[in-house]
Amino acid sequence: MKFLNILATIKYEYLITGVTFAVLYIVWTIGIMPRIQKKEVKNVLETVAEKNGYKIKNETNKKYDFVLEGTSETKYSKILIKIAIVPRISTITINSKNTWNLHYGGSGKPGKGYPYNRYLNELIPHLNMEVNQEELKLVLIYKGTMKIQKYINESELEIVNYKNKVYDYKVISYEDLNSHFQDL
Figure (cartoon, one colour):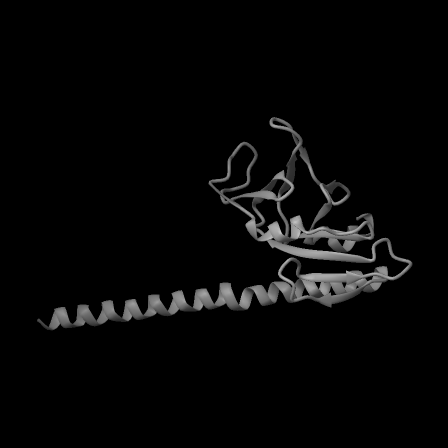
């Protein structure tokens, strides 16, 4: 009987430990990590903006996360930036103007597929937003992805980089932002 009481106590302690770790994980992934990521992006954007004659603004708009406001000497009057947080070992396929498919998981080795995929529906309001000729819609892939590709037609794909305009927006990875911002 004494053994069963000890066993019940140990199971209860494991249960409490498991629940505690689950709560801490949820707090970390939902509350703390996004703030750290957004602060990291903001720091790089501030550096890029300062070097290129833009001013950064935080936005509470649901369609984009940051705005870089230009002057008369800059290429764009505004750059509207939406951050897409994706795993590093992943690929993004742009199926149409507002349909992006993220493939992720696995090892990322050539010839191996990705076991998971999901649509990046959180980007749809930004991708559908209308802008004028002096403004640029930019999707910033944080921290990066192995490949961004776009369907040309039903059977052909092309690789997208920061120089290519995809529909009416551009895509750049966080890793390329500082070194290739002027090429946008």
